[in-house]
Image 1 (spheres, protein in one colour):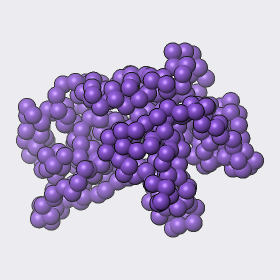
Image 2: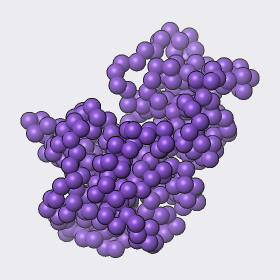
Image 3: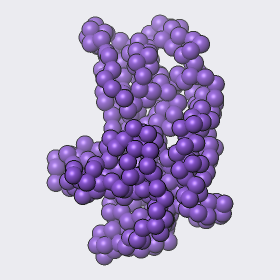
Image 4: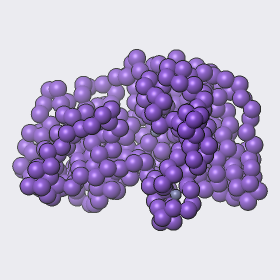
Length: 365
Ligand SMILES: [Zn+2]
Ligand SMILES: [Zn+2]
């Protein structure tokens, strides 16, 4: 089968690899859609960063590069190993790509994103930019009938935003600021809205695809930080109080400053951006204004909630987020390079196997 393999920085190759088979407790999935993530781009452009080298293979998975990328995906079950029963053969599934060591305190509590041997498909084991993938049974989530496979492939990045919103403790009537309207920022917006936030501000540079998507997905106000002062705008529209929650997904100093500046006294700032280096926070501000600052990584129990929300919101989310579909054989130029060279035009590019032209027909339940 064909697979898109990471060999090192700026070295992705479409290769022929042996088709995997499902061992005990494993499920073989025919991949239909797999999204290109910022993390994939980061590894391609500046990595290897999270992906281990052969000298430092991952202790849980044994994974190292060359390795197949791709961790945001959905497909159909084609084979079940002995004891695997998460979904019957032929059923449509989304895959939660985090491994579980099963032994650590965090795994015992169900906090799999905190596992001491944290590992993910597509970074620490072969991922889903391939025709088939074999995954542990516990990663598999059956898709409700009303949810398309395209929507299901978006569950992973939205779950990251959902977890950030949950970490912030969002509740009905809360106000919020999200900095950055990439997939994680938009996922945070979707989650804040679904979990009852009454007003959500989004900051995003320019008036391109991302700002437009933020408006479509229910942002009350999209602020361009190159035109308007984000903090002043938020304070102005909240009677000087600030927002209850600020989620930073931009990962640049001005955005973090805006998040801290726009949150109310006693409010919560959540950092879910992947920074290139250290950031500055004036801890005196956190002290004087009793602001909480939290980090957040991936998700732990949000997949089912996001999948359920997709039953009604799925079509609008696909429409707002998916800016291109490309076949696996064209994914390097048409997916990765396209996202780098025409960043402003894209939010999420979905890669399908080499039948992308008719994959929508394949998408029917
Ligand atoms: Zn991702
Ligand atoms: Zn663990």
